[in-house]
Image 1 (cartoon, rainbow, N blue to C red):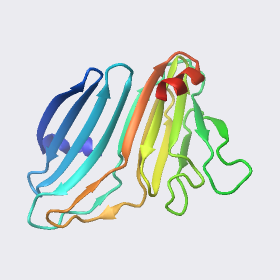
Image 2: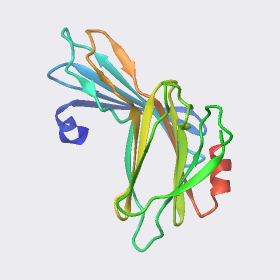
Image 3: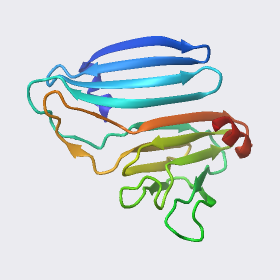
Image 4: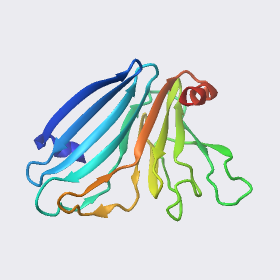
Length: 204
């Protein structure tokens, strides 16, 4: 996990005001050994509980980077609380030519259970759509994955703690000096109450 080694990286944070309802926060992390730079650029919405961000990886050194893999553009844990009903994952079928294309469906995630899903054939909405809504008693979070290629997501119930992860599937690369790649753009909207329809309207 990046939390095990990032303390040794150089860190810079810049905050900017975009307008009356948006702020931009840029976090720059640099590995002192390889000069790999990781840039996290986040837009924070002050009129609702929403945020979106993108990660950028740049080789600022004079040698190839070590292998970069298993990058999670989002990896968050949410305390669901004790004695709650199992959370429900609201999703929508992707396209593919079937009679149930784009129909909504729900999945209950029992304690200890993990749901993993991804599109097929490198098409971002083929088979599975890149947005979903995890609902628990009293609230939830909508997550959207902005990526035109192959992504993978998972939602897990760790017996009272929910965990959401998503990123590029099968990423395994070196960056040459001067090369840059970006992650999928992630948007999350946290909402409160038990009205799933209201949450969708807030997201819109």
